[in-house]
Length: 347
View 1 (cartoon, rainbow, N blue to C red):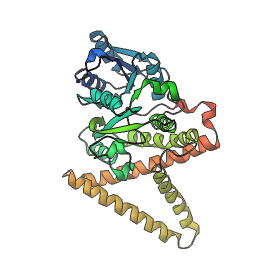
View 2: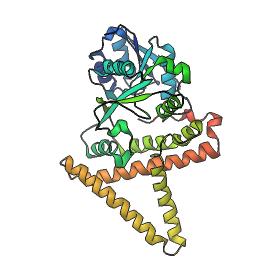
View 3: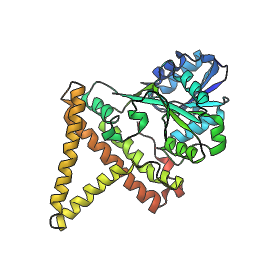
View 4: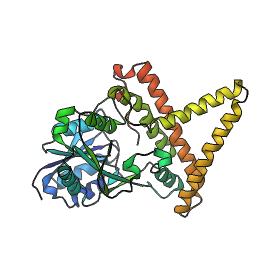
């Protein structure tokens, strides 16, 4: 195995319940820990995260803390990239656990495929055993909930090219070529960076054999905020790229417009209420069928109402966020006033 130095960057804030497991999964991995430098970029945590990190720093010289007063992921990544000495940079998430071969396999495939970015697949886990947390995990990893995002739903075996991956493994030269993370984007910063990479003839590969244990939100309120922010920043991403990054992003927007316009037209246009009602029946019938199949597979039919509600919240929150993003970024030009990066990431 090469003695190449690999730089790991972990954006982090208030992760006292997860950061130790994340670091342990790196330390106990197959890749020689002495060939790693790990930067945990902390967004001014006000729980016990800092105390946990300091204990790891005292024990392992490879682990470093960088303070991130802006508290958002793109700033964290840029601080880490600027500090990194390795020619390969891996972005990890503090809310995840990684398989033992994760880093070694990423580095292998980055070189073998002559790729610019490679990443693994999310194995989305419930944050706890509650029906609410289970429903959030299952719905946010199902095509009916999140479309065809390959890193969430892939069941393939061999690596293949995709439009984006989570927690990518990049050649450092990529950032010298296309620039750093866009600090306007509290959410969707990886999507924008990867789209920019593809526009510059870069290659991104998903490695389906690498399964990341990613812990979903535990409450509907947290999930709603997260998907709202995903939708909210998408119009800004599209503006920066001068085109939509993906087509799947428009489905929740159409759904919310259908709800808003359908309800309004039903009040004033004869016959509109029948079309609106038929649309609602169709949506909730599909929702119920999908929810039933998931609950049956999990051998717990009590999940059905929780799943139906979760799917509805995902579609509603993303669509509402997208529409508000159109207003704020396309009409009010909020990003030109540099206010968008003040929105703190939800967790």
